[in-house]
Length: 118
Image: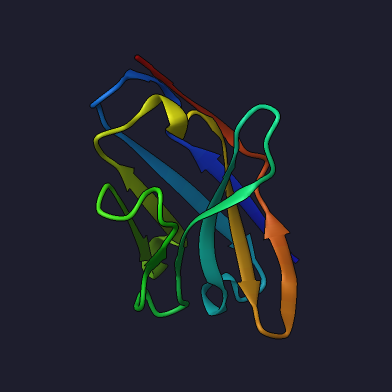
């Protein structure tokens, strides 16, 4: 079992920056790939970014490439999402997810709100 807790959300004006953190706890949390997903009101949850268990090979959704950066610190059991040049369409609830090939359904955090005003 893995537990995840996001922090760092909030409100910012367009063009601003926010940094999200997700702390994991539980069994072998550092053996999981970590990802960020988001869900805007009335829309389906979408992929934002992913990083493997070693902190290599980051991958990004098309809408955030070049603006967001995912990283992790396994010594702190934490994954980060640095979000720059934020746009109103980045508004939504951001979720952290831990997964691995043997557990594709993975574990989700409770989510945290990000609001970008124009």
